[in-house]
Length: 355
View 1 (tube, one colour):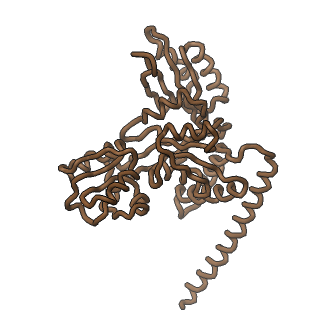
View 2 (spheres, rainbow, N blue to C red):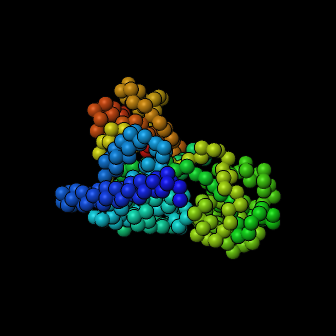
């Protein structure tokens, strides 16, 4: 063996030993922190966000910031599990993008609970069967997830974090090649995200909407003339071959997920606040509601309207703005909005996702 190569491998072995010692030391200190908390909540989204941001900022490379974040979140997940295993409800079954969002944010040591629909995710946390829920709220290509917005208005749950997940749709089937595909299964959102690609490459194939991409994978596994859209992990679970790896129409296709719990997060230094409000039926009412944010110099990253459930031709307005509800400027603006609004609910303040 070349002496230079041998020397490099010896150095790698030494570094690996050091990494092991440091990770073990971190775990022991995390256990001490857990004991010192004396029953306080084990998941602190603001603290984890601060750790991730700091390491991304000081990262010297050559590993990317995303890789560093993935590594540290898995370390945090393993250390947290020494105290308590978190139960996270998500839109199942296994192999969905929602499950990927759970693993990205909470790591693989958290217990992921597959639920039948978004309603069940809310219910799991509200009844204590799960500690948190991860639910999709909007896609960069197809817009808001209406059911999530409708449920969060009435739910006592709070938004305590967010997850941004790049969505890469794969076309999968039991056999290799696209020849003979008569049907393409997919969740309605996935079919919409890939409609141009499907129109070019499979114009005659029937597009069949299913409750989840994993359900589509299950069906495609049993039907030789069918294919499905979904994640590559679903292909592994259901024994399918990936025919095309990225068939989404938009390169930057991303879904934003919300982490829901019994309380929101403390300030992290780089936060967002989500709220929903209703306007009085009078000219300029919506402008008056948003005016306090503008006057305080608070930026909005989202403004979405939804019909108010139970009231014809009345609307609720969902707002995502920069800052934490405890920040003096935002707190004052919220008080002013509450005085002007027919209805106001702060859905939660939480750390802004880094990626």
